[in-house]
Length: 409
Image (cartoon, rainbow, N blue to C red; front, side, top):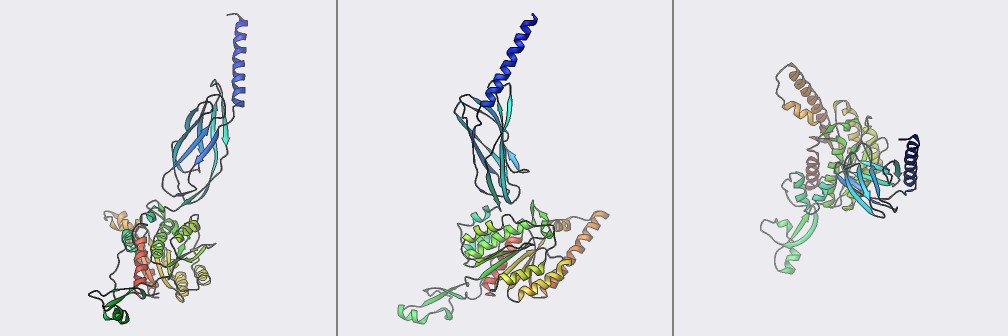
């Protein structure tokens, strides 16, 4: 082939490259819409839908990758799409929120191919999307359609049999065999010409305050969640039960910058708690228990049942005891001390060799020191719940119901 023919072919190829590049440059970016709820629960897969519209008169082929928060597990990205001239197309992918807090989606990344597929171009479509990741509230939703007692049993709380009656008048009803003589309303019985009994219920509109330790002890993990996340989930559970019983629930964080939500009544309080605490995390710092007690005294003047969720160890016992005495001057205090699940598992392991014997002895010594710290706290009249993260919701609900039915507030 003559040299002139080669030059013609080269010129034609260069012309095609230039024309294709020019057409790609002039191709408008597609429009993008993202569909995702502004609030999602942590640890639950959520579908995200992306819809794209081709604004050009030419077919469009592109690769799409959304700017989801980093480190989250995703399924279904990147995705290749073909858009007809003026057409629309969409797809869904799944993401798994890894931690609570507030997040922002970055720009969506597109790789457009030229009409003759000779070039590709990277583009970004800015589509701001604020996303808040809350604790997993699905267990609370499952309790919405059952009564308060049944909800307590669903959590695993064992309701003690009531002795006597409640302290607050509820209603009048016909006498039933087994009613005490004190329950009979003689004036109402005279008017109705049959025996009428008064029915009482547990006193309502009492106050429950949950104090959450945000210190380094709560960074320990069990079953894929930190002890602070387990504490937060348990706090929501006991708050839900208390609100269903007609009581007011508040929360205080034991932190460098404490957050306080005063006790409020009504199930809408759960939404406020979620909004108040969704971005709070434990930090690798020592908890100032005395400051937490001082904050409680300043912010909560009315007597309340205080549920302090922490991990009480021997080295913290003196400061925690001082703080507990300060809280006890006005409030009824319960300390829920979280125990690492690995300790229970270590005690169940058989002792076969020197290493396992040393591990068993060290675990036994640690548990003994922990139990001694709890006994010192109980000697002050405190209730101390020594529980694992899995047992925490049940233990808190049982204690709350026991206090309420005994009318200790």
